[in-house]
Length: 374
Image (cartoon, rainbow, N blue to C red; front, side, top):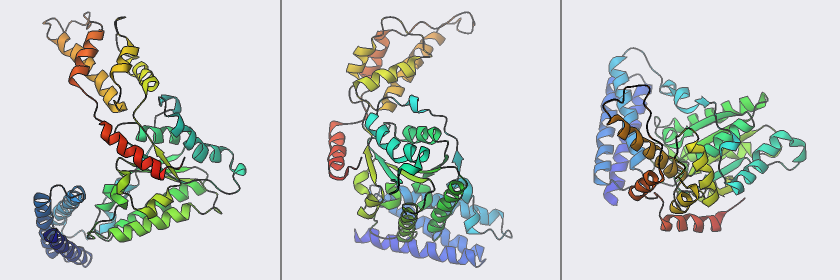
């Protein structure tokens, strides 16, 4: 992989020169260096498409292309790097509309989160030794990690900061640690004013994994994140700032980050009873025939993720709508599609299999057995 390392060094040098020139106001020269960095990063992505860094390098390329465009269109604006949509990208607050009751099953995960977040917010006097403020949710894609966090934020009426780790790491070189510091400062300020803050970092492994070569100051960003995590975990501070990380690849996390997440919770695919509950949720606005047997469907969808089940119901409904619009009189508002039959579900199940393999599940269970902390 020496060729890869050499290319990464070239990209780093061009990018650092570009940022330096940009800060000095030499924008035309900066644009040339950004373009050279783009060319090298594109070469890396083409020659080494399977390298784990390629997704982040594509983010860098997009950022540098945007910066070149800004330079060409705003040559006299003197735009500061740290002001490029920074709040919009990193500190965007969302108001989750998810209720605790919307989560089917996941009882073990719910219990762990209640103990770490909900109980301390309601009765902080019962926690003289403090409480866990770093929580890691891991498991296969589409099993409810994001939904669970949104429900918790609604339960305690928290400010909810939803952050894509790759967006942090793909900002201008040298700015990643500043973005992290500003994110935590904003969350702390809100918490000190009496409202809990939840920082939800999706794909947290993008932020924490150890790359072979540093492109973009990842070491500084990781150290800043560790520093901020240590700050919110100070037992003497009683404000409510929580960091919840989600990942589909927990084995890519390095040990310092694993330690900062005092709760490490596996979010598995829904079990039989959870699938039954999900069927009720997704079918409440559908016209089902009495022939539809949820128990039989639950047996046939063993291993399906929550998103697999949602897609199953959506595909069945689309099948009915497609059939309805094949009727020349479909525009007549008095005509309605036929009810969904059990056969419709069985036909779609035959064509849509689970997105999670048994080998993948075993890998998550092995990691959980080694690092679990409920």
